[in-house]
Length: 343
Image (cartoon, rainbow, N blue to C red; front, side):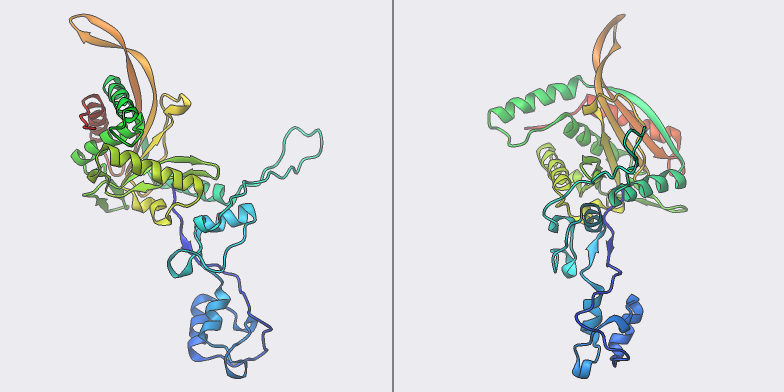
């Protein structure tokens, strides 16, 4: 998913009545030219109404991140005079209350449909998805992983939490992400960005995780996830997910370029397999499905139903061949089936 671009507003905010043909200082004129500010619309605060640099800066308005802009336009919120970001930038967390999109019923009474305008956030998501599918060669491979091991670990973690031996509610998704990190360290080319004729191969795992929020899909990332144990990873994943839902996520953690690989989990909705869309410029994304019973050969002619976890890997065929993508997917399954963690 696209992050929160740091853009400044393009509107002109005058501090008083503009003076026609008011004198403009050289520095103010240069800055106005760079920023596209019309000095004729600015009231100067210098001697004799002279327009100085600070007047041009004030006329630019308070800079706002992409998420803050979308929230303001979609919910009619007002920005504070200065935000908590760099240079006073207004972030999503500075807009304390989010008002969900209101549907405008443009159809008359008794009509068979209504027209709903897309929110700015929805437009950002749409643009990102369209760009991903238009500019990459995406293919999805699907594989099941025996989930008995992580189910046993989940049961063990739940008991440890109840007994106060750990302070994190470690979920199935946390164990899957932990296994993915291990697999990525063994397949560095999957942990990469495809940049056309070059690739950026990461030595660290900056793990993106898709989060469903009221405002739409958001993909924050956990930096240097390979340095975390299972408890630390569980806490970090929950922290960024909660920050997204509250609108307080650090914009730097939403940049698609900030993550090296993404995991999207729809298992909680009962989905077994799906085709996740790559968060470009990343080279791949893993979709995690629900756990369902499937027959398995236990050896010696013995078959039994065991719980299987659906894994769907979408990769950019420009960056990865099918064989390497499949080997990585099988490695993820192997890590899940043989995961060792300490509480």
